[in-house]
Image (cartoon, rainbow, N blue to C red; front, top):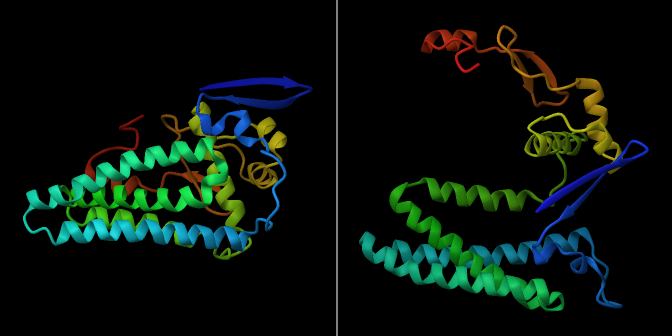
Length: 241
């Protein structure tokens, strides 16, 4: 994986190179004239819901086998083969889908079913080691997917999400949570640009000047409010600095 950056007239351009066959240039080229229904948001949500139902169904089946097995050894034996079938089969179906896009109406539900076996098998085996935690993680995962497609809570919901994603993506790329202004301009990320102009740069924490960035809307930056808590536990604010 390789990132190339170059500028022309102050414009930032990024080229992404990867050996992943799903992201190769030909994967985004048209295979010819396609006649059919136009893609819509509601259609995407409906198809996502169908795939989610397929995944939940097989995951629940794997869990039921685990719960009805009795002792832990029998429980592991009951979901182990399902986990292997889901992992190997899902990998094969994913490769088929990558190279044969036209088959996706058939391969996508099959992959969802196999993925459910993996999720159910892994979470069931983890339940033996960490009781209660896997089911919460699975519920949060499915709950997040169900939340997609619903209406926004308020007009600031989407700009705030964009600002948070852009900030953490910048940190992952450069270890600096402040997105490059040239990158924002090139990508037309106007919401994050406007919030950066209002909130200013995310300033680093230095000894003697402890400031905290609150990712709210609007975003603010203020002094650390945890001095009293640090005093109680016996660790000063500059313990890790």
